[in-house]
Length: 235
Image (cartoon, rainbow, N blue to C red; front, side):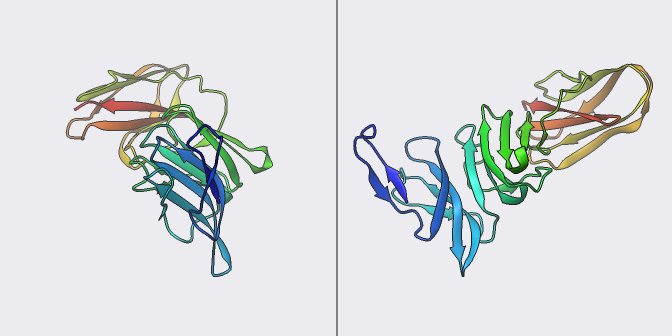
């Protein structure tokens, strides 16, 4: 059951998105477009449910399939970018306003109960066993437990980029370095380096020529530390 008001809460009307569903969270990005997550009973089995309305909640349509894990919370950074979280470390992400949803790796099997994004990049998730997850790249290449930021300062120059980009950082001592480029959905596009590098200033060239404009990610692994930088291609 959903309660709806259009007079600042003086009166409330009942909406019934799905009779058999137990609803856990709701999020509207504007007066018309909203999403609900929860639990749906199908043939005496419980599965997650994700519903969408484009008319202010008067009608609802199901998104995703009938056999997804239970969903507990949902958040949107803007009208296009949203995340839903649930049991067994489940994270779903949309970049097109819920038309399509992709699974994101969470790195945990704990039940995820609450999610908040303050912008497209920065989000937090809390779950069972006192787990807290943090991402500073929209979770595209995996949301990891929130830890102290890397001591390595990686720069992508220029950024935004039109064709050629330089990935630069300092090594206090020689180290095994891996540098990879990922697309906006986390697919690996190129491996630029995977070798021992000497101490000192490092400068690796990457050509984005031929790639469509959009958001890309550069993952730099130095020893056991990983730094991820977002790169915006303008044309």
